Image (cartoon, rainbow, N blue to C red; front, side, top):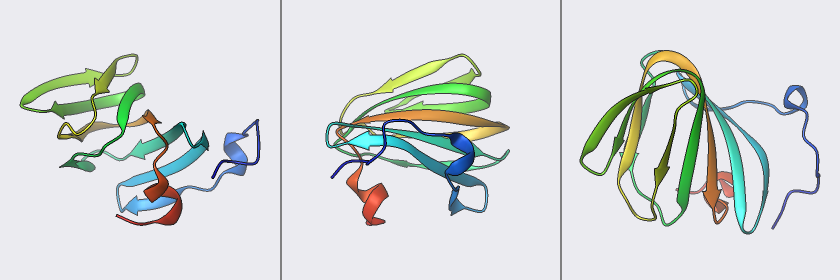
Amino acid sequence: MSSTTLFFNDDSISWEFVTDKIQRKIMGFDETMMMVKVHFETGGIGTIHSHKHTQTTYITEGVFEVIIDNETKTLQGGDSFFIPSNVRHGVICKKAGILIDVFHPMRNDFITNET
């Protein structure tokens, strides 16, 4: 499975509501990698979870409390973080913002809406 486009215009991709305070857009993928733009309202919680995918995240704006394994850091626009495979992690949005998540391999569950 892969996206059929090589170029993506942000305005032409609809937001998918994850919760009342979190929305996401899949910005491109193939079997090996996926990039996802995630908008958080203040107070939005990315629940603690883990997955087989390696993940790196860039914070474009906002302030987030980031929990990786047993460590918590407050990060803001311009900062980034890395999550190894199968490590528990989550975020709490302290000031509305946007995360750019990159996963390896791609998150098939995001395409099929499976958990």
